[in-house]
Length: 111
Image 1: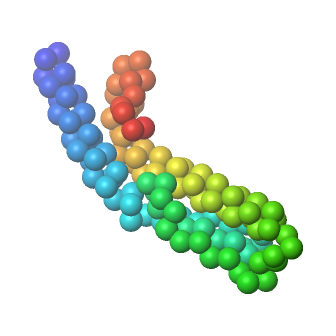
Image 2 (image 1 turned 120 degrees about the vertical axis):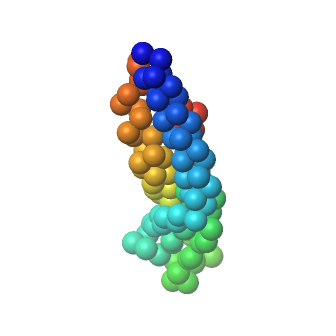
């Protein structure tokens, strides 16, 4: 019993180290969100930071500022949703094998 507990604790420690490494790597993983048929493109990293915004000139209409603002918001939201989903996938790759061994569906911070 004690050896099983020690093994589990070692696995948990290793997983935590791996999770920390993945969290650092998330800054280098980028995703994109688009709106207006690709007229507005937003790139974000998986730490929910906006990296780049591209707005095609034909969507810039001084008489329809509200439409452009809506397109930007939609693209940013999509990029952030994609980033959150990708970050969760990356974290699950590390945490997945051990999570099945934990009683009561224990959760680790950051997951």
